[in-house]
Image (tube, rainbow, N blue to C red; front, top):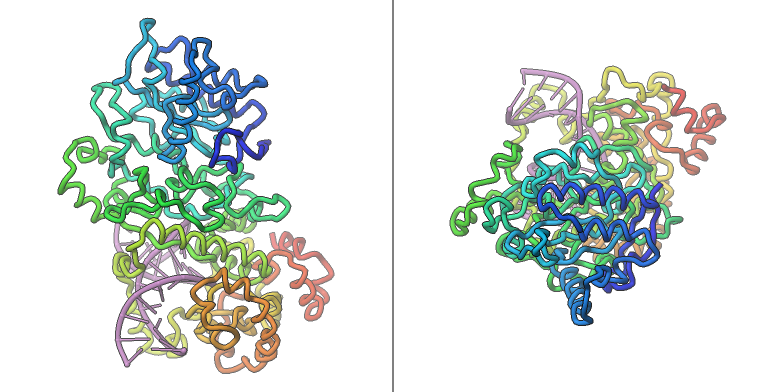
Length: 581
DNA sequence: CAGCCTTTGAAGCGC
DNA sequence: GCGCTTCAAAGGCTG
């Protein structure tokens, strides 16, 4: 299993906080394998990369030795250059002219414009190394690496050898939610272009996205690998929320991952260079934000589209046109992050695939989460919004309004006019969603009475981690119409009613001030009973699903089950969940 | 094949 | 300030 080694290199400076990932040699071996594929191109006998990788197992690390790892390394001056370059590149997009540190995967980009040595090998300066600050967790089959297409650097596809380890998610993994379409082949990073020359033509070209960032090479199939849902959050790992993970390549903001130190992320402070150029919405590194989606590319994922535009040097108008097409997605909220994280688990547990059903379960589980657990997601969401706003200062959620296909709201409302006005009072009709063959679907019939008890006791007891009180919260009565009967009142009483109104702007800040709000919870609990109003007499929604399934085992939940259903409580909730299978 | 379903939260808009 | 709407993810389903 992979291990985390705090502090990848003493010389990393800002990178000190990065975690060097070393898989007991396996990692480096695979990286070496990766590098070996490059040799098809430059036919290097004494591959510096390989050397560094092979030597990395020795006591001396490349990081420590720097350029002097090479026997012919001469001068102190060169060593100085080396570290200067390292530091500079760390702040400037992660490209190295010298082999990166061992333990960190990288892509070697031959710079054919550079000079060749007399022996035919590339001079050290003829390579550019794209440092991956997050180590490779796994490397794909050699077949993939030795794919002819990958032998030439240019076409390093998105399938570059990065596979996320299923059990170690990057803390930000759930943030990488902008789909795989981000890597739109277009949008050449201007400042990187000079760094990469087309291996065939020698003409400067725009690097393929995979060359720029390996953080998003995962196919959708890889994304859903099962892992401990909160593995990266659990305190015992003692990792900061935004620490570099063991497994994560898929940083939502690759550019930031490459440029901003973790501490900057955690603290919320962003180096000036992180702030993107407002004009085009791309980070300095040229790596598009994952939230940026080009509709065009989304429709035609084929790589063929890349580009005339990308390769052609015609910057001007065409480029602007493409930029106009960029779609910056909204940052994910806490629940979305949670869903991303937990979906695979729920799918595995319940053998469900339909997102609607899964989301129902996740919704219940979300409410059953402890305050602290939710707080983590709120914090993540807050940071994501923060990053998003940093990257796209001028972006507004309004920009995306109407970009989706218009929903058939008119149709729905038309239905309302036709009858069941009760259902029509809400945006979401209270029609239970029941996937046909739901293994996880619980004994809705046998335990229907469960619905009468507070759906999520913990929700009633635990105060939120302080999400910003939102309209959703304030409009909770509306939500109740789609929730189980007896659904707990809003866990997060509107600040305006409970605490300082200023909380709304900052979930995190409200989290810190949640204590004050917590004291106001019990009144809300008591009000639960009074909630048995017409609203609750509405058709029972999906929540016929057993709470034991919908909610993860939870002490509070157990307690409630005990009080309401001693029979069920007699067996562990987890068993109850399993038994449904 | 576009849109729906389903969840919560964030944000925008109109009143 | 409140209520409503839209969008964010996801993937099967539907017309």
